[in-house]
Length: 262
Length: 267
Image 1 (cartoon, rainbow over the protein chains, first blue to last red):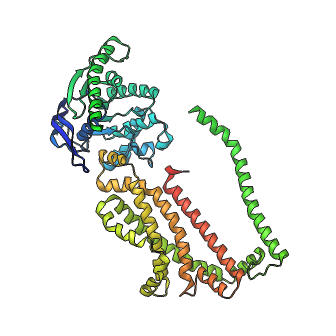
Image 2: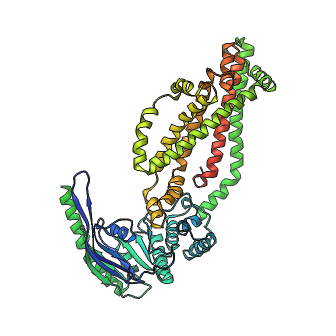
Image 3: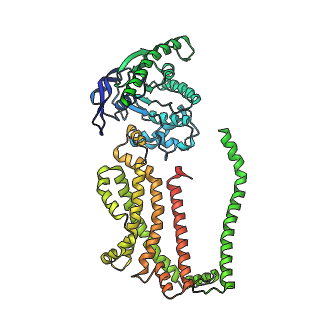
């Protein structure tokens, strides 16, 4: 196992009212090396929070996060995050953005630049090294963010709805790109989305989460050959199955939303 | 992609022509005002005590340059401006970055900013005269304080306007707190810092004039004020125009520096 979550929970307190909110409850999850794991759930189910906890950017209120099989030797990071809003440094060129991780980890300039150029090539951005983020389209920015996350050579890549801000066409292209890069790098991908189609197209396993408090509702193994198409028979069956699971939770989320609001 | 390339290609040949026209209009506007001004004075029999002609101002300026009085006055004032501006900016930027990034520094600095910022810095000059004497120091300190608060406030705004996601991304990529400060907070605040510097240089010019009215025997402000007391209006105009030139040059210098420091924010 490359990642083990044991009974992970997260609570917030709303300062103004003192009200306790349970964002995540008793999450148990084992992730094997090389998986393309999808975390699927209604908005507000805590799936992004779970990702932040795995990244170490948020602390869990209970439970444990372990990385049993991660190689601790050398100057490596266990995880790297790709954010929905890209989070590129606007004052850095494409190359300087990609180089950021190795730079702050004191990798020698020549080494980190050569590695960055290889990654820029991997995400098909060669020729754009000297551009600033604001000179790129959304899809290109997300490619930069992916290359930047890969530059630390992490074992696990964490994606927080990375394609949600893109138009449908660009999203389709980048979905294919992600599958290709996942295959070429042999990294473990943990991918948060609320898109059913994306889950079915990309994942090797889909973890469906419940509405708040976020728990794991069901885990679905995806044994469908690639390339996948939403119109394929196996894919359609899977879509139906996961749709049913997700719909219950979305409805539950909406119902509890109305209770909270009324 | 292709539409952008096409529109760029289409825009290129037209651009120099347009620029020429814009510059011609600007030059014409200046020339027109000068001609009207000269005409009012020479044809309207205007008393040169109130309004000297542009030609007379030019002659007077030339004399003051040849005699060395104007260059010396500019040098003395420039020394006060530059020193005051540099000290004030450095302290303002450093304090602003710290206050923006660290809560307790903000808490310590904030009441002082709230208390001192609204005071016209010229009102502090008498105190600084008492404390630092009649020489350059009192003037430099006054200018520094004036610049400091403008730069400080804008730097704090700059730090607080940084997208928190960028701090998170830097942390996720392995940056230490110190690295986040140098590699994210500083460049992220830089555009606002330059806003503060632009306001600061204007403040420095105002304060150098005010501090040179009294208690000094040198500087552009002194030259202007002495001319006024002698009712030498032509010379007053020379002083005013020279201040204008200093203002334009300093703002050009800052624009250049901003382009060098913030190439990503090119407007």
